Structures are given as structure tokens and as C-alpha cells.
Image (cartoon, rainbow, N blue to C red):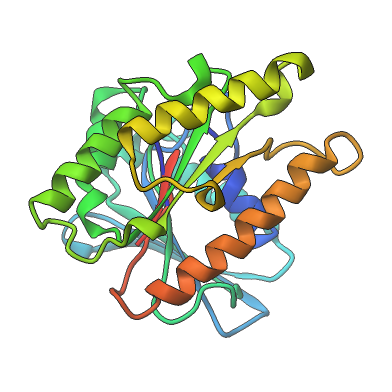
Length: 262
């Protein structure tokens, strides 16, 4: 899964999907390292592995289920840019936990977003060819979330790679778009804003359908914004279909804001 911009909501999305607060959300550029989440058959154990260049294992830990705070601290030390600049030298972090939602060989991959440092944006862009499905997460509070230097830039790169056969397994149906942080938009501006977001996305991704785009606020609660929670449930149902279609296509899938499944 990939995120198109910094602070779009990638880490919050991953936390909601796995049902654990194991990644630290941030209001600024936080993810500095690719993090791959895979299903483990052991519901009592969560494994974390830090991998450097040339697939060298730098650190490896095993946690008991329920030790979310310790896991969050570990991932923060190795994924969060602000916590440890040395994480720029880490190639990726693997997290294995009981998450049967992921079938076959699918992984959810949280990557650095675009719109922060050039180095982190480049790291994210270089990972695009590995994907067979994408979850694009954008922040509607940033000029509607469809900025040319952020989400549009990533979509254009995906289209280029697909046209040049560098993403040979990508099915356009496997691109999901989450427009996040709608709780920051005044009620009387939401309908017009939503129409604009859809029009702009359609310009750059002609395959866009209503079933593959979602308006939500990942940090909202049922009591405050029940419609956003219902929209997230619709997203999970759609994602399950994408996983079902993609589980044997390749070994890896991604998350980005944009998020992608690889």
C-alpha cells in the first residue's frame, strides 16, 4: 500500500486494518523506512525484523500478543524518521502478526510518502514496480488531496510503469483511493469538495469507479462521524476482494498515501 503524501494517514490506516496501534501516526513526515506487514499463523506472537542493505538482518525481535506499546516503540525506532535518522540506512522492516485478512502471499507495505524530503520520496517511488495493487491515501485538507506534486505525480509514475510493462501484473481494478481527513472540512462544503476530488482523480486515473474511492476520516469515531466509519467498512470489503484477486499474482503487495499492496 502506498501513500501519496506525508501525513496523509498511511500509518493510521495500517493500524486500523490490523486492529493494533503498532505504528505511530504523525502530523509531519514520519515514515522513513519501508515497512512490510505479513500474516503469521501464530496468534500469540508478533515478530519484527530489521533488514539492511544486501538483505542483512540488523535486528530481530519477537513479542507476545498484547505488547503493542513495545512493538510501537520498536517500529518507531526503526521506521520513524524523527526517532532515528539512522533508519534512513535500513532497507525495510518486516512485521509478522496474526492477520488472516491477508491471504496467500500478500503483504501490506507502508512506505514513505511524497511531499517530504527528496530522499524519502525517491525511496517510495523506487518501490512502485514491486506492486500489483495500490491503496492511495491522500489528505483532503491539503488542497483537496489531489496535488500535482504529490498524488498526481505518483499516479503518473504508475501509469508510465504500466505502459512500459514494468508493472506487468497491475490490474486497474486493484487501485483503491482513500480521501482522508474529511472531518476537517466544514459540513456545508463537503459535497462540492467531494465532487471536485472525484473529477480530479478521474482526469489522471480514467479507470476510477465509485466503488474504488472512499471519503473518510481515519481518526474519527462512530459517535462523532458514523458515515466515515461506514465508509471505512466499505473500504475493507473492497480491499478483501482486491486481496482475493491478487493473492497469487506475486509474492508482495503494497500500502502508500498512496499506499500499495504488493
